[in-house]
Length: 479
Image 1 (spheres, rainbow, N blue to C red):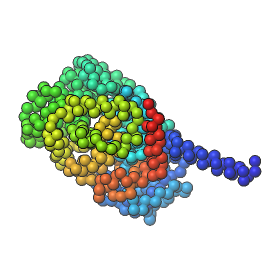
Image 2 (image 1 turned 45 degrees about the vertical axis):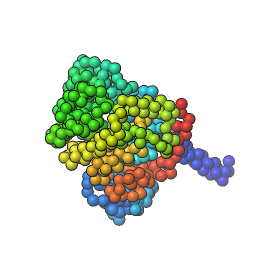
Image 3 (image 1 turned 90 degrees about the vertical axis):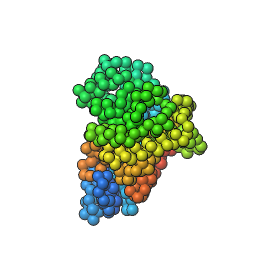
Image 4 (image 1 turned 90 degrees about the horizontal axis):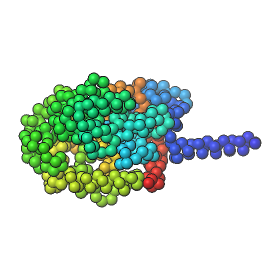
């Protein structure tokens, strides 16, 4: 073969190789194999510790970590570095969604071509899975960590501890204290990162599970169960409360009456019996015990105002696989409209507004907050996309754009005990998002993503658009 023909042949082979990596598979084996350092030059860094914006900076990445952060004029650029011009752009740490479900029985069938890619395309580089099928989740966690699969860093609970007859798939039934201890032991042994509590677990099962988790040194988090009060859960060491469960009940002068009734109706009764003194005492207890709150406001709004949030054209539906549209969405919608959102619409509107006010009050008092969405597949809650809406609702609740951004960057690192995430500093893991505009001017600017760094591998806007096209194809071909 002549040299000209050989060069032409090699160019064609190389082009085909790039096409396969970026547009067809983008399997994270390519994400792990970072051949050259990456340097963001002349970029503005958002300091998620609350400091001023660092302007005209250079950030150098080698392997999976940041190796240098310096003023652009003083930075040393490695030879053969991939240069990303950050002039006029803003660099933030990769985002975390701290309440997700990825593989959830028949409701959310395993599909690595949908949920993980939607997260990455939206700058979500880490997730806390709050209930799912443990073995396949562990496989995803391992494959992503090793670079065999493209997706966000994962922290997983596995099956949720629920009542004797669980209301959801991916659940472990608990009838008594012995069950609570046994399930915690089993999940800890089988590789769960933490324990997730659901609403129907009986009182004795809950406290036994809490005690066993404490003995084993594993975090337990989740709902405040119906048989337990928010004050008790905080004092028992529950590390996070999801979706404000138990919070408004704990602020009511008729707490026991409300908990004796079906959990759905009664928003007006909640509001009429709300007591500011009880609310302040509960918030003070959360601060004292450092009981984190994950309010999932986007989900809450979707649930309580479902006739508004679930109607009209859905521009994101093209990303939804058949299982969501044909099975999961109809189940969620039917259950919500029949059993939950049955109060008069004005009561539900006022209740959601009260939730916003409560989140703002907790934030001002010093209750630690995390951004979470309860994605996927319920009331148009989409992986990745909905986290940006959650941040906007947190600002609407009274957080500053910086505080809202911290709930998805710095705070997850603190909560999870991961010292390598949540800030742009030398030695931190290279999970980053490059934005076209300043998120501190408008939190909606987190949607204006120019590029994503995932474990040290840079995905350009074209790459991210390729991921979204890949999801559309996978959704259209799903069953």
